[in-house]
Image (cartoon, rainbow, N blue to C red; front, side, top):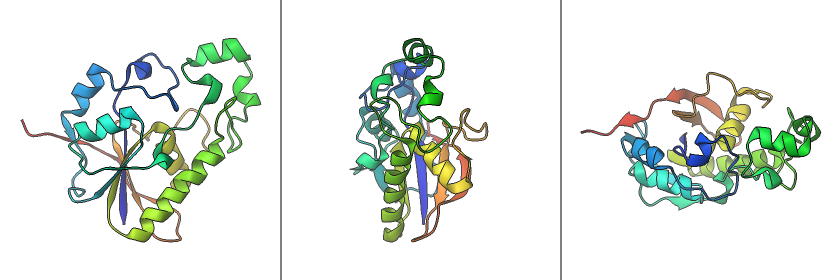
Length: 198
């Protein structure tokens, strides 16, 4: 079966380069206006719809015209703990220039202070993939950057280090092929969201 992963639309904190994580920020007016013009990629018109419980994801799903969405906490963004609400510069000013290295950057053990490790994020995303693969029907999930990164890691073997690979476009959809008991595979990278008819 195929799973179409779509990241939520832009927020004010995205524009300010602030870590959102578990904080429930809404779409910005510009983000809402952009997402209201779009539809998911073709081929998912009758797909089951899953969504992160975070407001920015729910608003995005609504803007895209997705109905009867099932909220699933496994699709929420990584918990960034004490760093939520901060910019990268503010994190480093507060916790030192080696803050990311001390938190285990470039590995699944990376854990923001008071937050969730990358390995824990991957485990919950993997659980979601396994559950919906067993159902067999095509699906859409509206989610977050961390979940798309996790999916990309699982499908390609990328080590998860920053910066993110240039070929992974977070404004487009990542379509995975899921089979019970198998690792996810990329069916289509950067599938464009469609424009709504005028």
